[in-house]
Length: 403
Ligand code: ATP
Image (tube, rainbow, N blue to C red; front, top):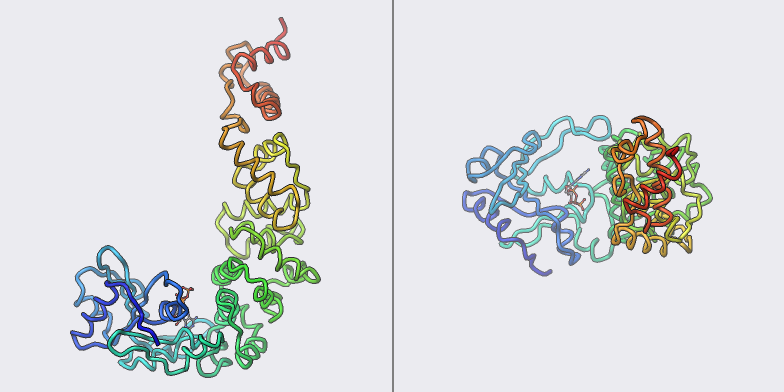
């Protein structure tokens, strides 16, 4: 097995801990990704040193999850999470261990991890610590629960959704016994918080994996997460998987596709569950309300769409419609790019005439001024060249001022 080329800061932390008599390794996702030839996005370090030792050894640290033994060490302005080897106590509520205890045995720490591919530790001196055969599982493209998958899932039900998400991200198969345990315990996902479910769903959908996204409904997970959503996509699953595969990997677009058969009257209730931020929520609701409209790809209609729902939402709408096979959507998206580049007027604030100008022409301040501005905006959306102060002033004089 090849050596892992880890960042000098991680190597430094490990060497420093070792020089003080502690064991230390990189562990988890970074080892898995390195074996797969993927550049890890971060490097987690595990050590026999207790948090207070870590804080004494390194000059720049801050507490991250001190209860769970995690201290962040800052080297060269980069953050590394250093976690003491730990054993999780009995689990309560199918998610959280009652307590954790520290250990000096790396094997015990690996035992608490979810899948064999995530339970490998590594340092340059000792090489790989791989007591569950994670390297072979990675080579054979298999996701396997550590020890008894049944117990693993009953301890922490989130691991079931993680299994499906990892399967989609890596294109690995979930091993038979692990999959059976998942299906048998699928109802336990109800114990998991909406935010954790949402975050896993996002990673799963972003993977765009046509073959593996269907595990979400085939395992029964989706029906447990939201019966309404599951019922809404029933009989259209293959089409949805294909659209998710085709779509830009943006969260509002992906969720708009997933929830496309949920009626506008129910969409808010459905989306509130996932606790999206307000902007994302508003975007998905907006797309849901127009998802069945055909795209009109002439300049005027694209400007009108952007003016009505905003530029960002218009891009999302066209992305979604492209994924849904609307033949005009690609062209409409290109037209939108050009409209933005040319700075065509689509909003009141871009108009060459203002409310103040209209008032100074003798129209009393009030509702009427707003109506006149909307009238003028409609004209310039149709004909951008008319966005000229004198042209617009003349229109006001001709149509709204009795001479
Ligand atoms: P990614 O960052 O791509 O989501 P990752 O494996 O790094 O992948 P993290 O959630 O950062 O994911 O977890 C780091 C490591 O902690 C995992 O590789 C695994 O060893 C362990 N781990 C994380 N969550 C769980 C869990 N719910 N149950 C058991 N072990 C877990």
